[in-house]
Image (cartoon, rainbow, N blue to C red; front, side, top):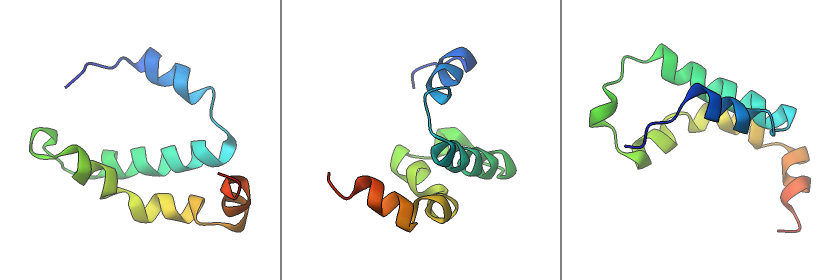
Length: 70
């Protein structure tokens, strides 16, 4: 697994909209609250781990409108 620094994460975060920052916050909160052994978790499992929390922010009329033309 590639080593990622806090500075690299911070750099990416500074480019996100408020809605996306909220989704990131919920996902990171989920990870922080769980007692997970990251070596036993696949990328796919990790991707779906916070899906319910992220959906609260992304499953909105505003998001649907923003992505409608893609």
